[in-house]
Image 1 (cartoon, rainbow, N blue to C red):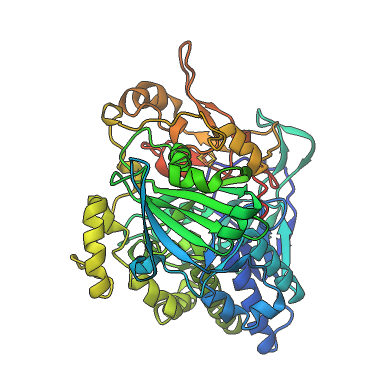
Image 2 (spheres, rainbow, N blue to C red):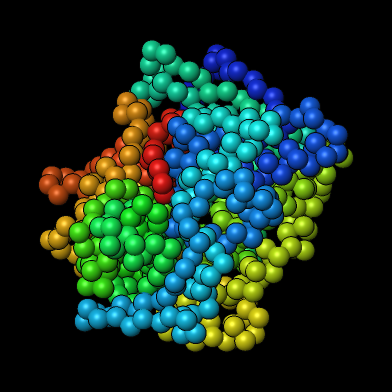
Length: 569
Ligand code: SF4
């Protein structure tokens, strides 16, 4: 069995370790909306075909389902309504139907312009959509899946992919090995050491979220991105605020997106304010990681945004109750990897199912899971899980409304590579040319290649001089993040000599800026040997894995159960 482990992971890999073997029929890695939709739809399809003896298992690294799920979120209900036509009656948790919506353009001088009704850009119109806390939705979907016999194991982190090569030399994915538990910070087994198990399945579904650490290696190993644009990401920072009752009433079911200050025309990004139930607001800021500034700090942009008078007025008298951060795959249709291979498929954010013009992906993720389920059901009936068989998933996608939606904005994000104004002009042409714009197919750049030298940096940090300007560590406290401290760091700085000999001079060690959880600190005194890595703060956003200019940081999975505890996010 299995080729050699292809990734650096924290497992002891000693030959005498006996690992439990767990055979299942379909294995899903990650309990996000895409994978749970896949499991639900698959269970129903198999039942409809009289197949009731198949084990469908979802593994999730977080302690509880939904703890690592974060989104704005305004959900287009199209995907959910396909999965459950009676989703409302069944009790899918929503915060409210979108009422008033608008776009605000924030100016540097503290003023803002408001665009509402016909003046609101069509991408930012949200009538018919619903405001949700995605981690509540995912928790609800999990209970629906369990009613159908799907097994869901939280606290199990998939650490490595298991491969097998047949007599013809064809490699296939045959499952995963879960992360060993009980390894100390020096890499030795502690008392109570629990070896990870080998979970084997003819089909593995990777729905790990953006920049899945297993999918990243699979995409590279099997060249799933051949002929595609590089994926480009944004980092989103989010807080939930409790506000005075009058503000809560004014904002209930209201949706505002903002552009302009503080990013201006220097990059791709913007923000949101969504009115939730119980006098709460969801607020957040997303910035493209192809920003050129070596000191780009998404959290600092968020703080500056909160300090703008138009936003500060909304937040007046309120307090932060939750914090989180995650990346979003913005590259669109041409940046999606091949969706299948021998023994596996990719779904959801892992496969780039996100409409970056509207910054909406939940409906597309659910649809991707459902389409994958249809292909998997056919594969089970055929008794065949080769790439040739699972290609059916990509064919189904190409014939679906999800493809139409993504193809209709296929050049959206890359048009902004030339600057924000050029992007706005091109996007206007895209609207009248069915998504084409001025160029038939725009290419793109991997985010880590776009950082400019530190000498060109103009980024200024905010002053933390008001109640709303929480620093990163205070915010991390509100994320509920906890990791077992006595374990090896799950952020691997692959070559610290690059940090010391090159990065300091060339880019000024951007990891100390872009991480929204203050994980990386650059020593201010003495002879530096590399960054201090405070891994226990990590909120699993993957920004470092994407944005490091030398690709010198690798995010690997920590012990199962560690990480943020997102509730109501
Ligand atoms: Fe995100 Fe990396 Fe910081 Fe963790 S260490 S919070 S993955 S940037």
